[in-house]
Every structure is written in C-alpha cells, then in structure tokens.
Amino acid sequence: MTMPKPGQRVAVLGFGKSNRALVNFLMRRDVSVVVYDQNSDLASIEGIDPQNVGLGYLEQFEHAQTTQGFDWVFVTPGMPKDGPEITRARQMGAAISSEMALFMDHCPAPMVGITGSAGKTTTTTLLAECLRTRPGRIWLGGNIGHPLIDVFENIKPEDQVVLELSSFQLELAHRVPSVAAVLNLSPDHLDVHGSERAYIKAKEVLVAHQSADGYVLLNWDCPITRSMRRLGPAEVAFFSCRRQLDPWCEPEPLAAWCHQGWLWIYQETAEPLLPMTAIPLLGPHNVANVLAAAALAVKLGVSPEVIRKAIRAFRSLPHRLERVGVYAGVTFVNDSIATTPKRTMAALESFSEPLIVLLGGYDKGVAFDRLAERILTKVDEGKIRSVVLMGASADGIAQALERAQAQRQPGHPFVPERVDTLDEAADRAMDLAHDGDIVLLSPACASFDQYRNFQERGEAFRRQVKKRELGVEEGL
Image (cartoon, rainbow, N blue to C red; front, side, top):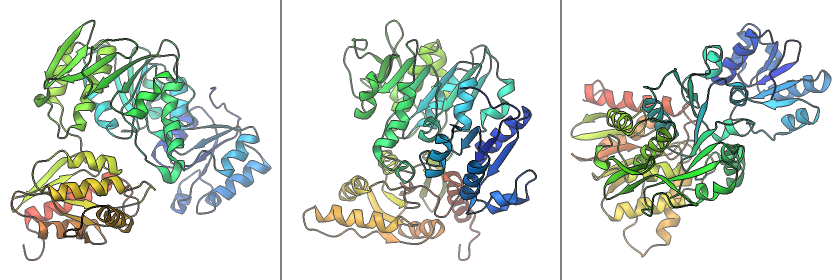
C-alpha cells in the first residue's frame, strides 16, 4: 500500500499509544491529520478539534466523511473494522488502514512476526534475545513496547525487526513478515471480533498473506494452528511438545520438539538443545514458547550455543506467573496477563502447591465452562483450596461452576468466595490461605472493568502484596 501524502485528508480514529505515534509519524511527513476519540479529556491537546472528542466522536467523523471525504482512515487496534462508519468510509473510497499495517507495508528491514492467543510476548522477547549477537540492530515491537513507527526513520535494511502481533493488528495487514509463527489459538476478543471464526480469520492473515519464499512455524499440538498449513504458499514447519516422530518427515516437518526430557531442534540434522529442567520459566506452556523461539532463531541462522545461553539467562516477564512477594508463608503470584480461560488453565498446571485463585474482570464474551471443569478437578485433587471471584464477570464464572457441578456426582458443593475489587480479593485470599499455599492472580478475563490494562491490574496486586509484606495496613 502507498503512504499518505501531503495534501491528502487523513482521519485517525482513536488516540491511544499506537495512534499517537502514528500521528507524530504523519506530521513529520507534513501530512495533516484529523483526530477523533471518545476521550473528551483530549480536547485540551493542541491540534485536536474539541468537537471531535467525546461519545459522539464517530458521528463527527461520519459527518466529515460524508461532507468532505477522507483519503485515509486509520483505525485504532481494538475498534471493529466492519462497523457502519468504517464500512461507509471504505465505500466512499477511503483507504482503511492501521498504524501496524502501515509500518509493515513500508518497513525497510526484514521482519519476524509472532501471533497466537497466549505466549506472544514471552516468545517474541526471547527470540529478540537470541538474535542480539547478529549484525545490525534488533527492533522489538508491535503489540509490545513503544510503537516502532515512532522510530521508523532509524530502522536500517541491515537491522532485524521482531514483532508481536495481535489479531487487531493483523486484520488490515497487506504485507506481513516473511518469517512468522502462530503459537496457539483459542477464543479471545469475541466482544470485538463477534465470533470465534472472525478471530481466527484475523490470525490467519499472517499465514495467508505469505509469499512463496516465506517461512511459517505452526504449533502441531493445536488443531487450529495445524490446520493453517495449507493457507499460503510459504514453507511450513512445526514445533511440538507432544509429537515425537521422525523430526523431518515431509510433508509435516518438525523444527523443534521435546523428547525424553530434552528440547530438540532441527538444523540440518536433529540436535538436542538443552534439558527441559534448564528452562527458567514456570509452567508447561512456557516449554512451547521456548520451542517456538528456538525454532525461529535457528531459521534466522542463530547457533544452538547462542540459543542455549539466551534461554538459560531469560527471566519471566512482569505479570506472567511472576512471584511478587511472600507474607506469612504464603507466596503471591501475579499472572495478570491471563485474560482468557485458557491462559488461566495453563497457570493452574504450573504449581504443585495448594492454590487460592483470584478470578474475574471484564467479560470478553468467552465461555468459562472448560475452566470451571478444570477448577473442580483441581479442587477434587486438593490442588485448589479456594477461588475468589471479583469484577464484572464474577456472575458468569459462578454460573459456569454451578453448571460444572451439576454434571458431577452429588457431593460436597464447591462455593467460591465473592468480592467486588482486586484489593478485596487479595485480602480475602490471605484470610483463606495456609502456610505454604500460593495466592494466584490469574483472572481469565480482561481488566477493563476496573483497570486500563492488565499491567495496571498486576501493579495494583503487587502494591497490595507489598503492603502485607511491609505491615503498613492497620492491624499488621
């Protein structure tokens, strides 16, 4: 796709982090931009028309589109791309794009793109660490860190760009990274995408838009990602924690896999990389993340020795099964990144100690039934001592637990605790916990009912734990 030019009319819908960087980028190219956003506080920012902010911002955009027209419309990531205002703008000839789509269209350096429902940030960050010894600069971005379009002019052809890509960032993409990975897929963001199929279709863009000289790494263990192998003309390879067949057996070759407690990679021949016990991250799901990063690093020419060193030195990222404190023999673990039931189910498999689990938040329209079944199984096994529900989705999770119990043999009913806020949940969990237990914040929901993002929620949990540790609350 082309680049907006001076003199063209450009609308930017939403003025969050990525679109603020986009506006700066366009202004450096002397492109005038009209910004629309639902946050009325932005009216005080120089260059933003106060009429274009607030709850009626889309009406103002549509009026301007109808009366004057726009050549380009850039949509904020979480906005539905098939809404009536966007559809009419497209019909009137506007090019509909996004900050990430524009960046990928014009990025001068080779790109690697990683997507999936879980594990993107860990895999992307670990891959970037594996690449640090290569010539040129490594740029890490996409759905992580600062928007790379803000430093677009500094990226050179000899550099390497590593992108974490969300479904929202892929929806409008034309050009995609020529080396790509889809880690896993489970229902997510259904409140925006509308259906599981629409969500999967957005992820498929990373595979379907490949060229014949591209490379796609897929998770063999996930039926949805495995089915993507015929979507495009690129070379396809797999990583797997389960499949232990001939590692390079066409037409479905393995690039990285587990065998007898070791990670293996294929680099002209099968080679053991390191024992699984050497992975410094909690949870079996992180084995898959490490396999994916290793396979991509091998494809990009990184030696096994460099990959080993990067894995051994890697540490858990904030809000991802992060131990944030100990009080009265109880360990507190922050897994605020768990915004889906599947991520929480993975977290439940990461500990042998009894758990007090904090669940709930903003409901993205994803069912909680499988999570409820897993929780009851863990309760029966003595692995979960209690569950504390909080936030807007508490009723939905409680109802899923009731349905799951109705399918079981009659017995002692499991009744979750109910509170309103995260602070109350942490306090209640402390009352319920015994010496040696783990209080696990793994909400299975987004944070938007009470916090701006999962990071803010995780920091709030960390502060609450530190208050306990320091004894600053009344009565401690």
